[in-house]
Image (cartoon, rainbow, N blue to C red; front, side, top):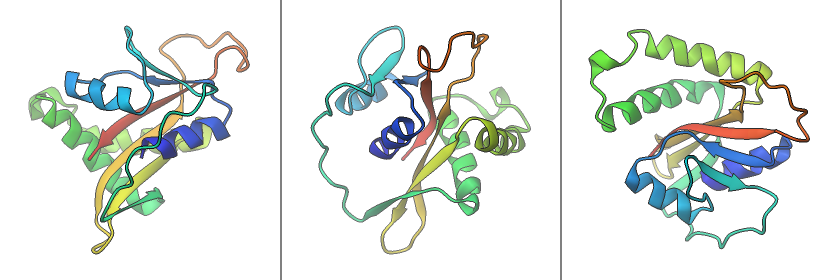
Amino acid sequence: MMERVKEHWRSIGCSTGLLLYASSEGQRVYSRVGFSQGTMLLFDLPAAERPQLEPLRDVVLERGTAEDTAAVVANWKRMWLETGQSEEQLEPQLEELTRQFVEEASESLEFRSFVARDSESGRVVGSVGCNLWRGPLPLVLKPSAFHFGTLWGLYV
């Protein structure tokens, strides 16, 4: 899925990919696909391509559709619960807030989701969302100087 995210970032002119949070295990995985260590994990898109990972078996990677939004939203919640957050720590309107964000980001931030489907059943077994970075700061630099892509909700 990360290869699809990186392709999308490049297609919308991003120069850097930004990952806001990764567990220790997640950092090991992300470093294998080209993110580097720091106070945040970054992926330099113009840099030479990293070696390709072994192809997946029994899984098909696809661009997410509007029909896949429910799975992306459910996986976003699952991801937080699996990181140790309790239901009480999550916003009660998590699903609605996430759906609204996806709608708004689709219109203004080049949002795209990618899903991993079981090749036999077609069931979504993983997903990720990616879009242009919009904050939490005023974006006062021209896109040629600061045009970041961000990913969120990676769940497999």
